[in-house]
Length: 422
Image (cartoon, rainbow, N blue to C red; front, side, top):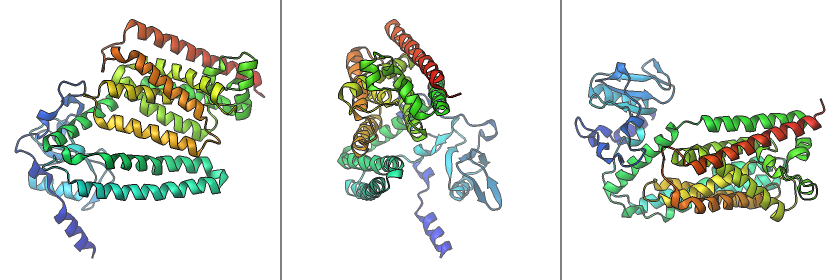
């Protein structure tokens, strides 16, 4: 039975070399040369040992004919027939190599579109994903309400594995993909892949440094105790409005309530931050984050439920709102998947906030998000895609933001030291 299934799988597998021109690269003329990401150098170069040969880069631990292969290992063969057998046997492949091309070709560009997309078949697959996401969302939300001790964890699971695919499949259903010509489908696919690689290729040291600071602040909170740290430097309404401690509107945005909180916010900040840095430069990231932390805190003070508030969510959602404006500004250039992903994230955050309103500061989320949109609207006419550098005004705002955030970190450290039991 197993041999029959493997035979059927091999028989049904389309051999991708049939779609490639001999000695050519089907997507070469579709690389968006007019865009910052239209660079063939974004594809990794072929290693010296593989030049002039066929080959693949292995994607997972694999054993073929008693030979073991590790992830990232490059395997080279001499002929096309050997290449066919190698490719079919390994299964998990991330890139492949042709003798006539100097770059490793990602699996995402393996096969070009040869015909328009069948809308009926496309929506059938979307419908299956939709109902699967609905069932998973209902199950995890039920766990959140029936088991209070697991509510936060269950709702996060519902967001990642239920709400995200639920919203994504709903948006996919509305796409009229059947209207795209074959050429347009291929152009979009190539643009998507090169844009994605361009984003990943950017320097993330600033982001990693910022995340390191947030982690250091959180470690300090853990040392003195979460509740004590929140009372000392988070957004406590009485301390701000009655005590005049307005510095808390900034310090609260650099603190977190627990490990899940900082983990979730850290991943979101890194994901959005690296896109913002790539599109507009690091100066905008620091300014947008700082401004949105403040607008989120002010919204929490004036419109929130009155509970103590903590977390970088306002600044993160400000980056989300700002990026939405950026995708509108450069709609003709930036691949549509980015805007769709941002809209999807916005909807999921809104639904997640409604489900978890007992422990989520929705006012701070909304205030940060609207703060980012406001900034995007203000700077809209002057935004430039992937500028070589930022203007003097933006650099000044950025440095002032960095100074304010650094001062907030110092203030948190001082307040934690004051209440430390050690």
